[in-house]
Image (cartoon, rainbow, N blue to C red; front, side, top):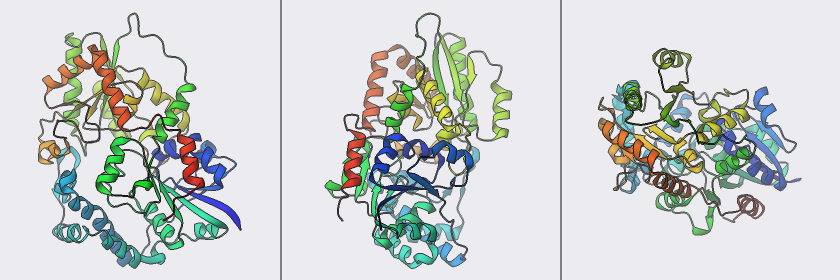
Length: 468
C-alpha cells in the first residue's frame, strides 16, 4: 500500500488559478500523490499548462441516465439549496429565497417557473430546513448514481485519502463528497469566490477543515454552518497568494506622472443579471462626463463580458470608434467554467493583473469578484446599480444590501443608484486617494489573512488532519 493520496477537485477553469498553483500544489505534493479531478483531463493544452511530476488527472463521470435517479438528484439539490435559504432567510439570504421561483431571463424578461416546479420548491424548501433530508436523498441515490470506478480503484492503493474541494455546487463535487463519506476520506474546503460559504447551500461534505479566506468568510461560516471552532482555519486567499507570484514576473509599469490619463475600468455583466441597456447607459453617461470634462483627464477601459462572437460584434459596432474609450474583453482564465477556452492561461492571468494595476478606478455593473482583485492590487471600486428598466427592483436587489447601504460581502464599496451618484462617486474616488486606498485596504482585508503563513498553515492541515 502507498502512503497518502490527495484528491483535488477542479471542476471549472477559473479554479485553475486558485488550486493548480505553486502555493497549493507545492504543499500537496510534499504530502503524497495528487490526482486532480477535472473535465479537462484529456485536453492537451490544459495538460501542457499544468503538468507536474507529482500530479495526475482524471475526469469525473457525468450525471447518470436513469430518469428516476436524475429526478431524485434534482430534488436533493433543491432541498440542499432552498432549504438552506429558507432556514437562513433572516440572516442575509432573503434575496435568494424571494427569487427561487423566478427564471431569470435576458434583459429582465423573467418568467415564473412552471407550477409543478414552484410546488416542489415550496415543499423542498420547507423540508430542506432539516439538513439531514438532502443527506437522506443522497444515500438513496447510492453508489450506482455516484459511481467513479477509476478513482475508487486508485484510492484503494493508498493508506490515506484526502479530498480537497473549493466549490459548493455542481455534480462533480456532489459525486466526490459522496465518495468521501462512503470511503471515510478526510475532507478539506479551500473556498473560491465569495459564494461558497454564503449562498450555495448546505456544505456537501462534513469538512474536517474549512479554510476561510478572510474575516467576512469566517463570519459566513459561523453564521450559516456553525462548524466546531477547531475546524475553522484562517488560511487566507489562495488566489491572492498566486497574484503575489504573478506580480513578481511582471514588468514594472510606467510612472503615472506626466500626461497619462486616469484609467477607469468599466466592468460589464451578462444580460441575464444586468440589462444591456442599463450597462450601456452607465457607460454612455461616464463617457459624456469625460467629454464634458466633468470627470477630467480620464479614459474608460470597457471590460464587457462578451463571451460570444455575436456579443463582441455588437459591442465593437457600437463602441469601437468612440473617443476616450478602449475595449478590453474579459479573459477566459478569469471566468471560464465548463469550457477550456485559453491556449495561454498563464499569459492571460498576467495580462489581467497588469490591466488592473494600470487602472485608477473600477466601476462594476451590479457586483463582481473583480472588485476583490482590484482592492488587493490597490484599485478602488464603485458599483453601478442604476437600472431604469426596473429589473433590479422587481428582483428585490435591495435585499442584498447591508443596513449601511453596501453590498453584502463588500460593504465598503459604494453603490450608485442614480447617474448623479455614479458621477459623484467616480470623482470622489479618483480625486481623494486617501479615501480610495482606505477602501482598498478594508475590502482586501475582509477577504484575506495576509499575516498567515499560507503554505505552512496548509502543510499542517494536510499532514495532521483534524479528526472527526
